[in-house]
Structures are given as C-alpha cells and as structure tokens.
Amino acid sequence: MADQVLDAKGLNCPLPILKAKKALKDVPAGGTLEILATDPGAVADFQAFCRTTGNELVEHSEEGGVYKFLLRKKA
Amino acid sequence: MSDESNGGGAINPHSMSIIVTKGSLDWAYPPFILSTTAAAMGLDVTMFFTFYGLPLLLKDLDLKVTSLGNTAMKMPMMGGHMGMPNIVSAIPGVDRMATTMMKNLIKKKGVASIDELRELAVEADVRLIACQMTMDLFEYELEDMIGGIEIGGAATYIEVATQSHINLFI
Image 1 (cartoon, chains in turn cyan, blue):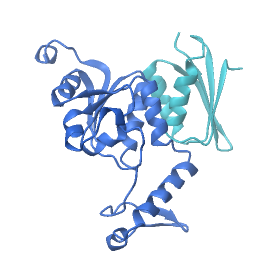
Image 2: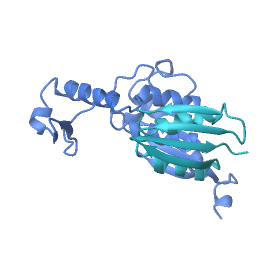
Image 3: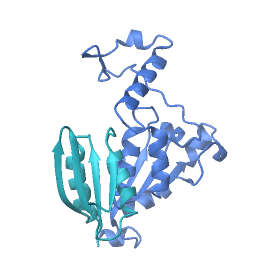
C-alpha cells in the first residue's frame, strides 16, 4: 500500500504532474505515492519527471484506460 | 567562459526563463504549462510579461480566442474538424462564440484553466516580471495586477536570461 494515493483521473497535461508534485510534499522521504490517471501522455511524462527530479518510478501499469504509477520519493 | 562573460553569475543548469508576448486564451497556455511543469520538476522559473502577454497578469482575466487569420484553428465538430473562413470570423459575435466553444472544450477535456495554472505558478514561486514599458504604453497600473509580481525592463530580463539554462520566447 502506498503512503499516499492521488486520483488524477480525467485531468489533462500538465495537471497530473503538478498535482503529483504537490502530493509528494506529504510523502516522507523514501515513501511512496500512487497516482491514477487517464491521460495517456502521463506515461512518458511521469518517466521524464522522475528522471529529472530523482524520484523513482517504481512501476506503472494500465488497466481499462486507467494508468497507475508508483513513485518513490527521493530519500 | 560564459561564467566570466555574464558578470560572474553562473548559469544555473536547473533554470528557465520565458518571454510571454501573447495573451489570447490559446496562447496563454504554452507559457503557463511550461512554467508550472518546470517548477514542479525543480527548476527556477522566471516569466517576463511584455506587450500582449502583459494582460495575463491582470487580476481579472478576460481571455478570448479568435479564428481570424488562424487557418490551423479547427474545432472538433459533428465527428470532424471545422475551421472558419475569415469573412465569417470577422462577423461580430463570432469571437465570443469561438471563445465559448474553446472554454467548453477545455472544461470537458480536463485541461486546467489559465486562472488555475497561474495560481499554481505563483504557489510554485515562479518569478513573474511585468514589463514596465508595456505598462506605460498601454496604461496599466500595478494595482490592476495580481500580487507578488515584480516590475522590470529589458535589462532585468537579460540578467535573468544570462543565468538561465533554458530561455524561451512565446
């Protein structure tokens, strides 16, 4: 179970990233954030976001048009 | 090299500046999307609002879009995409209709409003600079603008640009 869950379904670029950045504030270092999104662009964007910020994209998956991302906050 | 030529202010590799020159509903998006996203990715961001970009700092945003002279503007309609001949675009009320359509699409597709993005930019400590000359030219007062902005001129921007890794003109 992730430390925090963010429902970004129905939101378009760049809102899932912006909301995730905000939600990460409440996640302890080394903790995890799960994000649910329906924006297909979020897949490439969360990868780029993590590469640039040093947070880890632990896993991502898609089911029925809903993308799930698990981020681990930089320690 | 550049460390010495810019007066000793080293370039911050995680920084971006944007000159914002357009203030229509559609053109307001690129600068605000990029500034908020860059800030979320840990960059120091500065936006310099000049000419028609300046009204994007007004407290009350009244953004409109026009299809006049915009051959690429085609709205999804009845299963296809429809543009508008200039002669129709020029008819009074058509801009208002196009603006309403665009705003409805924005809402329907979960795209942020410019108000929302601007608020997020302020929250993320994006540095907002209003061009003094434009304020004089078009007679805007500081009290018409949102709080927390700075006023500056070309030299203020150039100083920012010499220290920014990414500099965009939109």
